[in-house]
Amino acid sequence: MRQKKGMTLIELVIAIAVIAVLFPVMISALFNPVANAVWGDQMVQAMALVQEKIEEIYATKANSSASLGYSYITSSNYPAENPVSGFTPFNRSISITEVSGTDLSTTSSGSGFKKVVVTVSWSGGNVQLTGVVGNY
Image 1 (cartoon, rainbow, N blue to C red):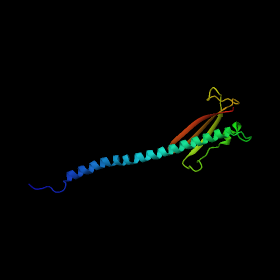
Image 2: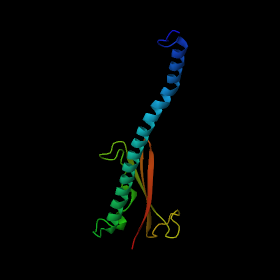
Image 3: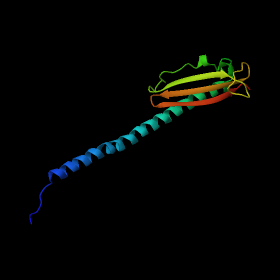
Image 4: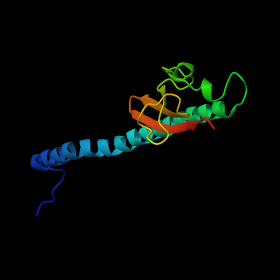
């Protein structure tokens, strides 16, 4: 009996077909974790930027100087940042509304409570944090 050397044409075609089917699966398995890691990193940065601005507003309220404090916390004193300085992929906006102390969705002038909504957005999504500042 004669020994077989090499591959037949049919074996070669089957091998190429199997590789053609598996190649896209292997490529997506490599790139999806990379994309998810980038998105996760951006989410962490966005959350830090939201927290930073909320804490800045809380610190402004705690400052008892004549030029700062509760009355300084208005939307006009916190303009939108497009992009956020030092973080070019991110945009940050701040909404400040005086609300009722019993219902944070009802606007109420002179109530002594302000709802602060900070939103950071980027091409991969957005993060929003809401806080309340009281005039006490």
